[in-house]
Length: 80
Image (cartoon, rainbow, N blue to C red):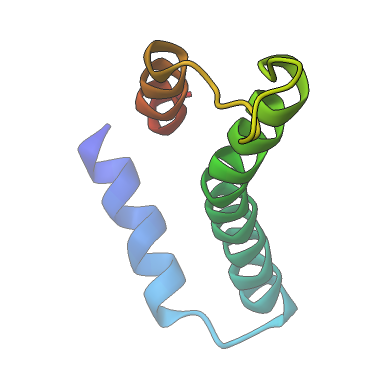
């Protein structure tokens, strides 16, 4: 199995640059972008959820997402 993987990598190393290579780069870049965007948006969505669902009527400040749920949500996000 290791020999087959080395053959594939060697074939990629000696191959001329083709459309396939650019396609692979674009797909990998899109995956990186969407994963980074997901991790970035978690903090924004958590604040919005706190303001929408955990606001107490008459309170001077907007509601906040409970700390336990915030820690769970941001702690599990990298492992999905």
